[in-house]
Structure formats: C-alpha cells, structure tokens
Length: 172
Image 1 (cartoon, rainbow, N blue to C red):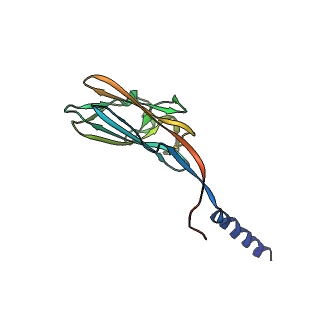
Image 2: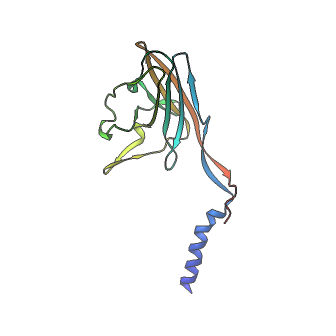
C-alpha cells in the first residue's frame, strides 16, 4: 500500500509542473542591439546558456576599403550599467583569460562573428569552465574598434529580465 501511495505521489510531483498555466522565461529588451557608423556596423544578441544569459553573439562588419581591428583589451563587459571585466572566447585557455589578447583584424568589407563570454562570470571546475549567468538588469558590452589608428567605441546594452508568462499548448 505504501509503495502505491509513494508511486502516485512521485507521478503527481512530476506531472504538476506540466499542468501549470505559466512558466518563467528569460527576456532581453531589446533582443538585438546595433550600432552603425560610416566605418563599421556592430550587432549583439545576449545568448541563454543553462540557467540564464551567459554570453553574447557579436557581429562586426567592416564598411571600409581598409583593415579595421577589434581591440579586445579595451572591450568591456557591462553589468548593471557598470564595467565588470573583459571577455574570453574560443581559443583562449581559462588560465590566460585575463592576459592581453591580440587585436582581431577584419579585412575590407569583411565580417567578424564571435561568441564572447564575460571573464568575471566564468569559474574553473576540474578540467573545464562553468558559466555563471548574468545578473538581471542592464547588461552588454563596450566594444573598441580601431580605424586608421584611431580608437572608436560603441556601447550596446539590453535589459535582461526573467518574466512569468502563460504557457501555450503542450497540455499533458
């Protein structure tokens, strides 16, 4: 008898969330941020990893006949409207994430696409790294682009929030 009650309780616990009428979802407002001038255009989108936003997809388009450079050492993660360290990305070992990073050259009329992770939200775990989620609020980046030897910057931020929304469909 106790096994039967335990089984029913277990089934109830697993089915209860499926029957609820709402769920929490992450939202970015705006979902896409962009900046444009006569030399380059930039767009960023926050990316949801496991339990919240943890990275940005960055796209930089060179609109000139000359090379331009992304200066990663002067590109800063913005968290709750303030600076919060730099970024790391594929090819940078965890131990070297806070060292100087070579600039990234974008050829004439070329496009750079990269996923970047805030350094201060990454922690070492055994033989890999773990991404902590960004805090709710204003998050983004200040990116520095070098054009003809001159640094030009752009701030791109979005408001990140976790909101309760009504579920649609998918009834059990």
